Every structure is written in C-alpha cells, then in structure tokens.
Length: 600
Ligand code: FES
Image 1 (cartoon, rainbow, N blue to C red):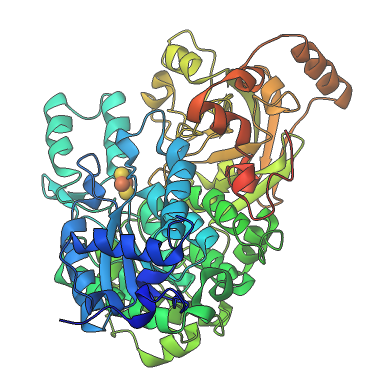
Image 2 (cartoon, rainbow, N blue to C red):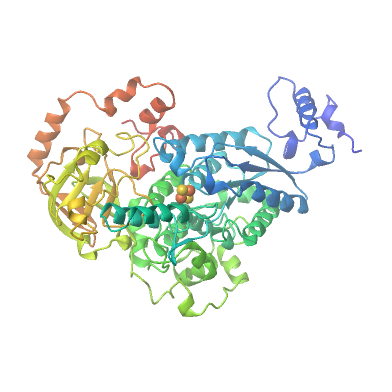
C-alpha cells in the first residue's frame, strides 16, 4: 500500500497544495490537521493513498428525476470516469442543482443564476483540478459556463445530446417546435383531440434535449464555437454510442487540460475572438434568441471581455453571416439530421472565412489547428441540411437587434423564423395586453378588437415584471384570426420566446415595462408601432411630450413589482433586487465581473 507523503504529516514541511487533494484545504487553523482530516473522510469512500496522489477531475452531475433532458447522465458519468482514469487522473463526481424547462416554476430562467452560483461555489470550494460540466437542458449549460468562468478552473462541457425525433402518422415530429405547431393547429380546430393525444406520446420519444435548434442545441453549438467541446459533442444523439465516446474523450481531455491549466483556465482560454466565433455560429445556425441574453450574461462574467461586446456586435456579425443550417424552427430538419450532415465540423469548415482561427480551444490547439486535423465526411448535397457558404438559406442576420424609442436598450427578433417576411418591415395599430393574465383572459374573446395587420403587445413579462422573464413572447394568434388562416403577426414583448418557436416576434424589449422609465410600459391600444428590421429600428409614433406625460401619470400610481421588491425575502428578493435587464444578460449585478456597478 502506498504511504502518505512525508510532507502530509510533517509539521515542519510545507504541504504541496498546487493540485489534487491538498489544494483548497478547509480552514481549521492548522493546515496539516486539515489535510489529515480530509484524508480521514475520503478514505471512508475506500480511496487508497495512490489514488489520492492523482490530479482530481470533478464531474458535475445534474441528473434529476425531474429532468428527462439529462436522463443519460449516469451513463455519461461512467464514460467520463473511464476517460479520466485511462489518462491518469482521479474522477470524482458531485451534484449541483438541475433545471428542466417544464418543471421549474415560475420559469427555468428564474433559477439560472442560482444554478450558476451553485456551480461556481462548488467548483471553487472543492479540490478539483479541472471540471467536466454535464448538462444539456436550456439554462443548465449557460449556468455552468457562467459559474465556470467565474470560478476560473479549466472547464470542459459535455452536453447530454439531442433526443431522437418521433413519428405521427408517418410524419417525423419532435420537441419542441412541433409541440407548438400542433398545439396551435389544435387551438384553431385543425387537429382532432385523439390526434393531439397521440402526438403527445411521440414528441419526446427518448431522453435528451429538444431535437431542434432550440436553446439547448444552440448552446451546444455555441460551446463548440467557444472551443469548450469537441465538434461531435454538439450533435451526437443522447442515446448513441457516439455520445458515450465523446464523454470518454472529454474525460481524457480533462486530464490534459489540468496539465496545461494555466493557459486553459476559462478567463485565459476565452477571448473576445472566441465570443465573436460563438456569435458567428449563433447566426449561421439560426440559433435561439435566448442565447443572445445568455451570451451577454456569460460575457459579463469575463473580466477581460465584458464591455467589449454589445448587442450591436450581434448585428455587425449578423450582417456578414449567412444562415446555413436548415433546422426547425427556421427550417425543416432535426438535430439528428445535422449530426448526419457532419455537424459542427462541417459547419465550421463552411464558416472558416468568418472565424478567428487562432482562438484557443480546450484541447490546447487553436480552432484552426483542430479544423485542419479533421475533414468532414462528404455528405451528398441532397442529403445534407448544411448549406455551402455561397448558397445560404437566408443571406444574413438570422437574429437582429432593433432599437428605437420603444426599445432604447434594444430588443431582439429572429428574422429567419418569421413566417411572413413582409411583416419584418411593418407598421400597425397596437393591441395591448397589460400582463400574461390579461392576455390569457382576452386573447380568444370574440369581442377582442383586433385585425390581422395589428401588432400584439404584451407588457410586464420582463426580468422583474414577471420573474424569470417567461417564454411567453410568442403571443398566440387570436383564435378568431387563426380560424381565418392568419398564422403570423408582429408581436412585441419584454419577455423571451422558446428557441423552438417561430414567427415575427420581437423580444427582450429594454427597459422592460415594469421599469417606470419604460416606453413599452405606457403603450396604449391604437398607438401606431413601426418595426423596420432592415433598418434595425422599433418605434412608436407618440410625441415626446405625450411619452413624458404618460410616464408622469404612471409614476403617480403606486405599487408594482419594481417597488415591492425592496421588501421581498429569500431568493425571490435577491433575484428581484439584483437582476439586470436583458442587454446585460439578466444576470445578477453582483455576479458580473465588474460587480454591482449599476443601481436600478
Ligand atoms: Fe430540455 Fe428542451 S426541455 S432542452
């Protein structure tokens, strides 16, 4: 049996705390005693002295019975451990909270920052030399990256991978674009009750993340763009052997990352160019609008990058980036098709002219060197859902930031997901709902005064107005219009929209309606709103004096979450007092790299 090293218990010799079990000792006032105690307890798990000499690779376990997107986590952990041990490390798993979209009330976004705190502090507190972050469902990878950057130990993402598509009456379907499409048809009376029930059985036929280019898939692709995951890691199916091989490789990569740890800490590895690559990927895949908010939060955690990228950067990159990937909701296919078309390896080869190829990846090689190592398989054109660079599906800017007197802080629209492109430049009469309850009460009323060319406005679903900024921005088409065949209208809100949804939908309007300074909050029925995506503007034709008058009138009305938050307790109070607006990522002000620099 191996013996404890001399320095462990020799009181006159310093402890080598540069890596492994001896780093970050619990404070008992006596470092040697602290190490002695730590060894007492870890030996209760059967570890030998020899095992305890190895670098420790932490594996974040986000398995939960409430998270089917993470159903394969136990198998992934086994495979990661195999990779770590083959490479000479010691793998130790530990839990953090787990967030699933449908099991988080009021929303998963409300808990994202909490998960990031959990992830950051547990990485920092425990003796890990590098950490494999297993996650997948929308907010989890984001929270893990936010926390990982702040903790600043080498991090390697391993997403759980997309689910397989299902079938109904011979037609492929999958969560969650087809959840929404089928539900909208059911609401309009175009789908029978027994069909909607049968569809419900098939929309998520396996574990794994939503199988379209929703937020989870978008983040997976963005993580590859950032250099934090192998190419195949974004798209190999959750239930595939390929996914397990990615997991094993991630384990061995983590040991290598430990060895090169000074260069591969996220605050060193990730540069402005890494994030510009990520935004290029986001635009080229027609990615989720949620990821605009998420990237701003992630960037806000990075002391050297925060402030160098703004919402305008997304437009600048969008102007030169074509939409190349034909996946729902912008297109027709599923993540398994993307994988079969060559996935991120094939896409990044197409995007090479736009990428910063010198950006470092977690392997220690640059993105250019990684691409040079592997050529994508030659998939026949007609079988691929990845377009050549010069034959795009959409010439530029799948997601566009618009600004104007209605959104001085900015708003986002996924232009590529519009069902009626004429609406991207449209003026119309506002039909206003003051909050989600008001909308639910009146949207399907036969008495609602609404026409197909009106603009639907939903207030008070922003970060503070409706904690967690719910994905309610895809305001349903009023039933009396959908029954006439209307399937798209301009819709505007301060909330978010599922990455799996589509339509001409303006989101994340800032400042949000709950903010007394907001113009969105004083819009009234009949105001004329003008959306010009080509020009990047969103305005309402109310005179400045009238805007001031309405704001003053509103100030006189006491109450609302903006004021009530000062006296709220617990996490709700922390969230309400600390959450930033969408253009800063809706992170907590005190978690940003520059600290609570702004007060609301
Ligand atoms: Fe988890 Fe869609 S619900 S990725």
